[in-house]
Length: 351
Image (cartoon, rainbow, N blue to C red; front, side):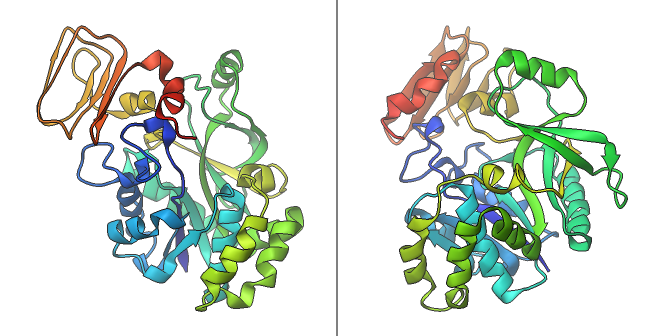
């Protein structure tokens, strides 16, 4: 069976003041479309995974928010992390949990705070990759075709001469590359075999668990030891006890950069990880002057290349700005140069 894992534990501090530690960006209607980023993530997998096979891993502080926003997902499929330990322990936990009930599970893992503008193409690519991982012991990651020399994303270097015999759209990964300096990013996009690492992974439960046992035995031992408790009334109590013992490490470092059978599927379906206000501006509909306005009563004069997100306010007038963020949420107003948005975490006082 196909299963979907949504990772929804992040704090989204770069989207302050809209995103806060109490209600991070994945639980907010960032785009002003009537659905939160978490709900949009769930929606785009319709027809690929049945709701009863959707799993959400989140911080214990957000479990009730997930239940409220995704009533279609069984409450027992919402897994609560007692502390943040990055993506590797998160993926290990849910993979052992799924395999307990479905030994032949085929899994797609997706972050909760990304957007996709071409959902039909997204579904085609994911279905194709899930067919591939169901038939092989392979790990597949989706690589986004870069549209600019982005320094905020990691990159995947593909070996385009080494296609899979089963699928001509899937290639072997040559190397994972860290977030580059601008000069390096420019070099990457001048070549046709570098892709943004979207953090969307596809594998069978058996394949990823075997990979943990091989490359991260300390994490694997923790979940092997408690395997029989997973899916029982004692699960949460034992997770609360053992989860802090897991190493704080990303799945990229823990597995992807070490494993052999790693493939990438280059794709182009209008993807963004919405990590910053600037990325939201890029993805949003803009007026003739490059402004993205989200709010019901906003007047803009002599302003360009700015993002104005004030849908809680009754009336907003913006005049004379170029390249700014104007964002209001719950009585807090931010006015900040887009070029200085890396300082927002500092302004918010949240880590």
